[in-house]
Image (cartoon, rainbow, N blue to C red; front, top):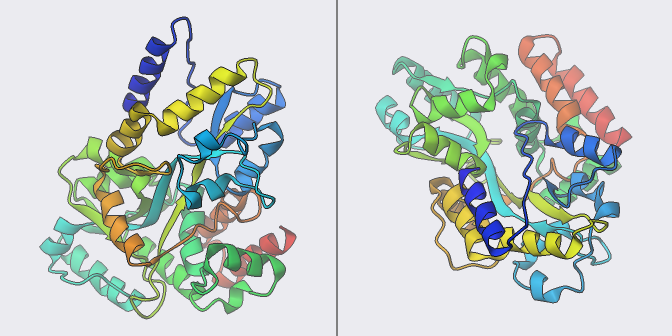
Length: 370
């Protein structure tokens, strides 16, 4: 947000008399946005998750299709996240984001772990070594339903179908949750998070887990490289990297998921439409915008750029991307309210209030209804 404020100030200086009012919500942005839409107070420019969430607002969105001078500045795969089936460009992508398990390399070294775990047996052995070294092995931010929902998608993924194909097969009923080859390991991972995590795992929020990871109090969390600046604020010297989620038996099964997750929409009925378009283009494509994304957030932008990315995690994720070892995101294209609905089921499992079979059935019913 500090770098974003610098960018806003620079835009205002270039546009005397213009004031940008920024409204930020860390955990309930969807609720805030929907409330404003319901009241007719639609922002001139707003940010929303790409996929299912963004499509809900396309009726209000400016159509960029003919603005090729703008759209040509973006990578094609990034731009596709805001493009409709008939090729209309309804939103502009922000940054590539990668998610999986994050781990503290210094903690692994302290515990004598020399190889990344590639299956649940190896992960459990790593947890035992970390615990023996006095380190909390896993600090899953289980208070956050969105984290648990995102975590589950790793164990849903069929790599041959990728994210879109897997999601479509689940929605059509071609794939059943009970038959997913790696689904059982989701519950084994949650069991490990309870056994080798803090005493009250459902009280751990995203900020607490990131603080514990950065300062070596815990070694493994589930999150993405979008939290680089937060991690740096806790400990700029933290030695962190991705640990592909060991969903199956081998390293080839493990997943790091990658997508341009957030996208910007311009309100087509804005009283300041041309200025809103200019502002959206500015924050995503200008030198100041690229500074914000590459230096401030530490992420790879969706716009074409030669600028070096400062984020350690984003650069680590590049190795998996370049080797073709990443898959897309399911939760953004899943039926509406996926994480809000399914995340609590996993919380109930961790509390012992639901069995694996009960949770699996609820996931199935949610997808069937969707």
